[in-house]
Amino acid sequence: MNISLPLTILCHPRCSTCAKALSWLDSHNISYTWKNIIEDNPCAEDLQKWITQSKLPIRRFFNTSGMVYRNNNVKALLDEWSTNLSDDEFLERSCKLLGTDGMMCKRPLVIDNQGNFIAVGFKEPEWDNAFKALIAS
Figure 1 (cartoon, rainbow, N blue to C red):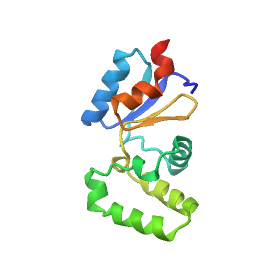
Figure 2 (cartoon, rainbow, N blue to C red):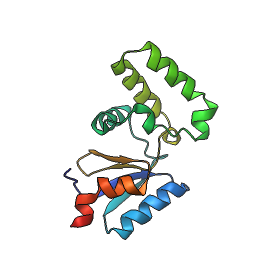
Figure 3 (cartoon, rainbow, N blue to C red):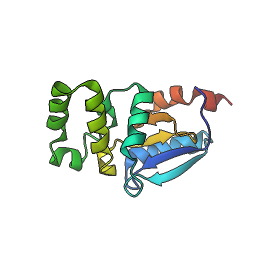
Figure 4 (cartoon, rainbow, N blue to C red):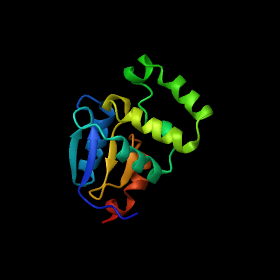
């Protein structure tokens, strides 16, 4: 994968997982621009592009442990949509929902400077693999 630097990392300022991700990037000397996902929530169109590029399940982009997700019973809504809608409609509605509130999105969300999806969430082994080309250089 060709990764164009600097990266953009969408984070929440008080998120411990985001702090770990930022520390990991710093320790690997990978340049990035930090954005507050609450103040600069990604739009539905960008989310749809990134979800499609990632080839990950849509639900991977939801912050399932967050209060917004739980208080609004989003799991039930996604279950209903996944059962009753086409894949394209499910993707479109999910992205519109994700685009309404940065607290709904799993963090961190990493894109390159060309706007291409790199990673969602932080698990060190996954990041070691995703950023292998950058770490080696």
